[in-house]
Structure formats: C-alpha cells, structure tokens
Length: 526
Image (cartoon, rainbow, N blue to C red):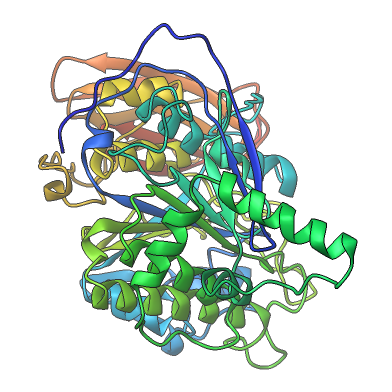
C-alpha cells in the first residue's frame, strides 16, 4: 500500500454520529488529531480482543504440573486432578483445564501461545478500577481518559474522522460487537470505534429486516427517521456489503454467546473490511462460589465458561481459515485480574492479581512464556500470584510485531518503554526477535534472610530492571532500573530491615526476558 500523506496543523475537531441501521443502534465517534505514524497503516493486520469479565482463575486455567503437589495443597477442594490436565506439546510444566480441548489443539498446531502471570504493580482488586487500568494502560495510581487501542488508532489515522472514509481507509477503524463501546477505544478526541449488534440483530440488519412501524402518523415519522439515519451513517453500506459477501461460514457451537460474536467478526473480516481492531466479550468469571461441582472439580461453572471460550476460539480460527483470512488475524484474551492462590470455603476463589493471557493466530509462536508460580512457600489466604509480565508489555509487543509500529512511536502511545515479549513470529513484520537468555538469572543469598540479602543477577546488556513485590503484588522497591553496556553478572544488597517477615518476590526484567525469584524474610531474632 502506498504510504499516506497526512495533513498537519489543522484546527482540532471531533464528531459524534449516533445512527440507526434499519432500527438497530450503531455508533461512530471521532478521534483527535495526531501526526500519523507510518508502518501501522501499511499492513492489513487485524487484532481481536476477547474480554473475560469478572476475573478469570488462572491457576485452574493453566494448571501447574511440575509442582502439582503444591498446587493441590493450596486448593484441595477445587484442584483439577493431575491425570485430567490437558498436556501441551513440548511443554511439561503446566497444562490446560480439561474443558479446553479446542485450545489444546490450537496450541499443538502452533497457533496458540500463553503468557503466564500477566498483571501490573500494586494491583487493584476492584472490578471497575482494574478493568479501567487494563483498558487504558494506566498505572494503578494513574487515571487516563483514553484507551490504549484508541491512542494507537488515533495516532495511525491522522485527523480521523475528518476526511474519512477515504480510498485507503473506507471502513470503521474499530468495531465492538454489542451495544456499548468500551473505553479501550477512546481516543484523545472521542471514540475511534463503532458498535454493531450481535447475533439475530446483526443478521436482521444485513437482511434489511426491522421491527414494523405502526400504521399511524408516529409510524410514518419513525420510518422517515430510520431512512435519514441510514443515509447519514457513512459506514453502514460498507458493513452491510462486507457481510453480504460471505454466504458460507463454518459451524459454530450453539448457545454460545462468545461464538455468536466471533461469527459476526469472522464474517466482516472475510467480507473484506479493513477494520483494524474488533472487541468481543463474555462474563461470569467472578467465581467466588460454585466454581467447581461438588465431588467433581472438572465440572461446574468455571469448566462451562472455559469450554465456551475454547470452543468459540476454535470455531473462529477454523472459520477464518475457510474464509482465507486467518493470516490477517491474531487474537488475545484478557480479564481484569486473576484469582487468589488459595481457594475459599465456598468451592471458589476470591479476587487476585496476575492471570494467564492467551494469544492465538497463524503467526503466534507456540509456547508458554514464564514459569508456574512457586507455591511451596508460606501462602496466606489473601496472597495472589506474583506478576511475571506487565500487561502493557503485551500491548507493546503487539503494536511492534503485529501492527509494525516503530518502537519509538509505541512509547508515545503507551507513555513508557515496556518490556518486549517475543510471542509473535518475526515474519509477521519481517523482523527477527532477539534470543531469550537462559535460566537462573536472579538469585539471592542468604534465603531465608533477616536484615538484608545479596541479589545476584545476569543481564544481556541494555535496559535491566529489578523489582521487589510482596505477596499481594504491591511494588515494594526497585533496586535496579538502568542500562548496561553489555552482558554480565552483578550483585546488589537489598536491605529489608523495615519489612515484615514473610514471602517476597524479586523480579528481573531484561529485554524480552523475565524471571521471578521467591525470597523469604524472617522476623528479627528468629
């Protein structure tokens, strides 16, 4: 595609286009003004975000195998039997919940990857606030009025909506399936997405079916307003025409709300829409009680949710392949937080912190980034999984390796320089991912320790970060945050006299590599 030429120094403006397509609500909103970033606009890649609302229990989704005994001890009443865990090719440390056979197949076909323990420092356990943090890319104590995807789209498509649609971008920048737009699409000047209805409403829209207007003056007025709304929505024809191009799709599971949404997304992608980001969602993951069925931990509420997720994603991938569009698309799952390490007395789990994130598509590297958490130490009822990867590192890596955004521009979009994670094949943007360092990159001695401990770490050069977290995920200290000229091994002394006794986590981040070290501080005099 020829690189676009953008206008600069225009007066800022935004527009709102509430509209009706044959009686069904469709909203389009304008974005702010930015100098456009080349690269992202010069490919046809599509990202599909799948939001799992409620807080998914990561330990029963990606189940530890290498330390199964410790896992079973901390959640005996809900633990998945070891012989029921779905094994992953070339990976023996963990497996999937037995309901996720479809995603196991995708993994073994090298079309799915997993990032373990994704979160952020000092996690907030409010559904509303933590969702806002994930959608905007904010720090825990930071409030942003734009979403990470909204900033990406606004930066890439300068001056939107002025001059749009046009020959190079004739379609909506982003689409959310449903009736309410997510803050993830909010740009500096307004939303960069539009909402389309789902399931039956969508197919009525495509086929021109609307609720009948009453035979009265009010009905005549309603018919007129619908016609005007239909004519003024500049994306209506593009969406309908794209959907009508697809007349044959793969079979999707029945009675599966997520599958119905993904079927709509596949139809629009297969019909040739140039829309860059889609968002779908499913709820029910707030499993405080009844997460498993009494006497059968592989059944119950959580098992049903994971089966719906797995079956929907599998059908979506099959459909995209049949439509010849699978190489354009990658997907990502996320929830506002994970659950606590220990189960509760109601056969459930309470609000936690870090969670596994699944990425899928033809260009995803098969593999599991990160390691099963250390569950052998003193685990309290309020303890959560330590963060291994910052969720904004996932965003940064998608922007770089999928949307082909220059790393310097990514810092503009996300406000900081986050760790690069190599989970997308380098051929997606014709770049080569750096090698990952080996094991035992961070140790400490003595361990347990009293007043202080010596941390030894290895770096391959470049930006190196060491963070200390408590078991609730709060950031306690940052002993190292600097650039090194080359590879080497270094030691620092971490003074902890002021800290209470208990378990702490030392986290090393160096380029695309991270490692977490469990450290035990004993109370003075013990």
